[in-house]
Length: 120
Image 1 (cartoon, rainbow, N blue to C red):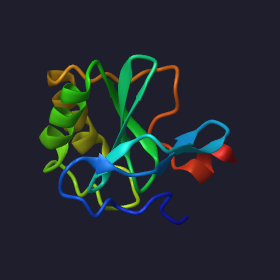
Image 2: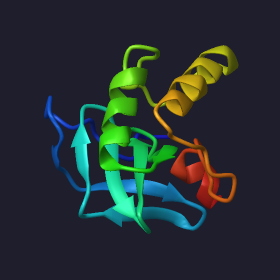
Image 3: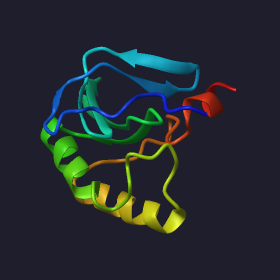
């Protein structure tokens, strides 16, 4: 499989169109912002933090500031530039870090499934 998105060349949050993985395949996000391997967009009063290479949902934040702070908090835990998935131990550390910023993992949405695996 190929990455769904390229990394954002910006070192600060800037407008950047990208795709997210959904249960029906890739969906374009034309109103998002990105920085490096992370995408961010608002929807239904929540802020979605996305892993750009896979388009996978990392988590949902109550505010844009919480989402940006969470991205800063998890950035050094794993190599986010890869088209892969963290191992279970690393993922547990990431989830705990996300929670400390108020970022949750919705159970009603696909999370961390590369788009081709979801669409198949």
